[in-house]
Image 1 (cartoon, rainbow, N blue to C red):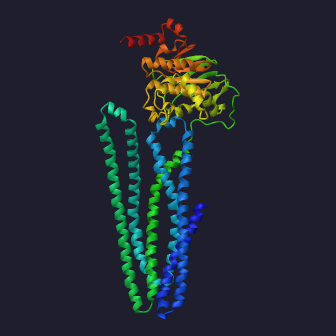
Image 2 (cartoon, helix red, strand yellow):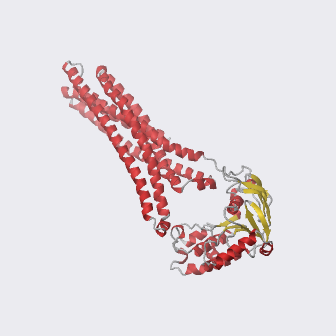
Length: 561
């Protein structure tokens, strides 16, 4: 309705604008020779009233245009955010962040322009073009026919330049997206670039992307100027032809002076409309390429879909059962093969083994970030696909090796685990995670800004903040993905104390890099080639002289060295 209102208001404004040449024609041909001052003043007053209305309607139209523009952007951005959250882990693992950010910048802007500029503009300009043509024909048919060669010359030659400009516009947008992605990678990897003295290497890559963008932009500007030159030459030749033939008609009294003046107004307005239509048609092709990317993104189906009849458990005990589970990533070979395991409520289970054997994938399957290609995983006897994702994710808490902290305060990062938590609950969680003491050492305490990704905190401090999140979330099941692997011995001890308190009364599933951290676990699963190679507690596995014993021996040699 807003777009329709915008079109109707614009048509009224243009209708008044198109009346002005007719008023000038009437003034020159009738009022001026007759000296009818009273009629002139009446006509001038009426026109002035219409102009005042045009000004008022223009203000309202501009406000409506801004509303349409922002509403289109808001709706599209909300839709993008909502769809982005529905997409599975596979999307994030396959698509770089810079490419996704480009959707919110360039592609959303393209949709904005279609809504508030191109679609209404094409309708309004099309109607105006028809009205101007009718007015010109009503003034003099022969004079109107003189315009046709000019129109044809631009229509035949102009679209070539328009298409080239549109093609270069699309290529420029592709280069701009690549350049923005590189800038994002540069800013994100600033620490690594300095550590490896890679500034020159990175600068060369940035400059290469920038030069590619610069060259395409220059070609685009050249083609745009060539397009404008063709348009201006066509218009000027047409104007000369109209003036020449108009002078001939004036000498023969075949047309009046006022009619010729009005005709010239309509001629220039019609050429302006033709130019706009041709340009808009070509530019829309560029925008549609961007919109296609946006629609392509929106058409992507999430890997994980929630059942319409998803149920919820009244209480979660924390029992997890793998039944002959197999899994592969896309077309890769099978990573998990015939995996069966029963984890009892409150049991502490560790997955150990060399890298690349599927340990992290098992945690992703438990959290239903992926679904098995074969078999099923049950929570308290119910297959995960039959439970709501809200309950699955709400029941589980994750502590990863690399903890993500938001660029906010310590308090808000802990409260992320339970957004409705009070300040007292936040501090209680921090104390339980052995984080309260180091937080109090900061001048701002819990209101300390941690920096982007928590760069102002040490690795051990970030991990204890993540554990505090788990305390305040209070999940029934805790999943740990090598939570202490990147820490020094002192930090590891501090984090381990917090974890031991977190473990109380919960089902724990951990991926362990350091075998010494899982000595107290009830069950240790040695994962090798996607299957359970060995199973037992620490002492039992050490006596088996198998894979686990070799892993432990390798760890001891590494420590000794």
